[in-house]
Image (tube, rainbow, N blue to C red; front, top):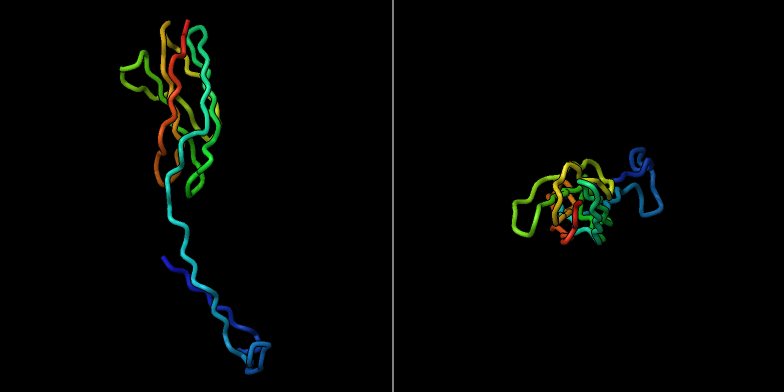
Length: 130
């Protein structure tokens, strides 16, 4: 999409002159909008287990993509080869608590989301839940 903007001097509408040579319109440079792109991976992720829960926190990605971030996808799994499950998280906050877990070792991963899509996941392994 190309956006053209034309600015006309009031003097041009009245037949008068202007500084640039007598009532001419000035065309601004055509500007391409920045293309959409997915965000990068979160900059860091930390996780600590407790009684039936995991507290997870992360830093926003250095490349937040275009348009701005709309949220995060937080997933977890027991062990190292099970299916990833979605944790509840909404908004652009950078922490959450996953509850209702059985005792064992878990992995957690987080990805940033914008309207262009979901960026790559950053994984934290070896979280023990009591």
